[in-house]
Image 1 (cartoon, rainbow, N blue to C red):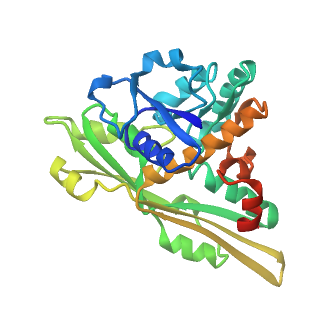
Image 2: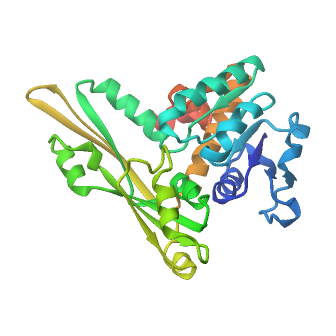
Image 3: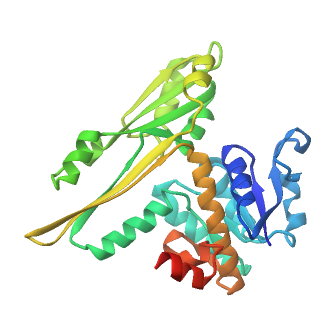
Length: 321
């Protein structure tokens, strides 16, 4: 059995625990948290303090890091790659290349396998965009996110001083989607807008909170965003379900007479549970790659699909080809 360590037990960590329970060749070794382990109630998994994680480096095949890109993964993934094979969902697109290089240096030096920036975007969408770009080279691809809640954006907004809770919705511009699918030129700066619902602490400076959120680099800065202050009751009633959606569209041609529109779309009842399932499948790929002594940092663009599956090769050929 592949022994999985989970870092963090928020929505994503809980989702990984659930996803691993459905896999025939995996089991959760333990969950690691900065909270008091006695206060963390799991679905049967052991819980240890994060500070003790290195004590278990010989017991864990792959770590799945479920922390925040902004506050955890940038610092912790490179350090953990000294002792563990690891998967993370680092999603700060503008600096992913920097993250890959930092982790790769450490993992290579310690004969470890790290897979970074996997989820659905970056991750599955990245793989899909690469394939359709290679097949139909004369064209253009656009990604549209939503309508639904973005985990990363919600998390960084919730960390702003004076904020109790935050949920950020990505809202795609349907007019742009329709025009792009017809091979029309669009203003890509208008592809999305954001609506960020915020529960503020009592007596908090609302103007300062809004300014701080809108100035968060890589997430909100420069993006059309509306900040909406609501009560905690309204947040729990109307914004507790983490649904999300997204699509990748490529328009292309092979000749002036023949044009193509390729559309890959996902609708998710639970963004965290789906992302967790992606991370879990990629954890198997990391295990298989490490077994072959493939060391360093990798992304979804490097992974063989068969390495993600629990099925044997003959079954995959019969069912998938």
